[in-house]
Length: 84
Image (cartoon, rainbow, N blue to C red):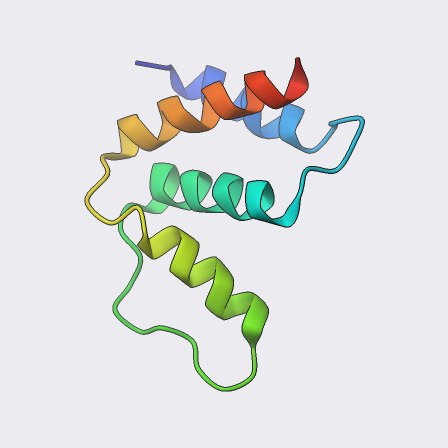
């Protein structure tokens, strides 16, 4: 289990990566971060033509049922992997 300090440090490192990850990886980072901080996504999926918001919601919602601690752990591991 990661500490809150480790999670926050990983969050800061994710903003300082030398190369920008692919959009799929960015969505995964977003989803893990949101699940780790807020828990499950709300019931209302964005609609209309806001495709970015829909993609972000779908990525987050795919983690429904994952514990906050589990999401934080996965987030830190992914950031560490990406940062080298």
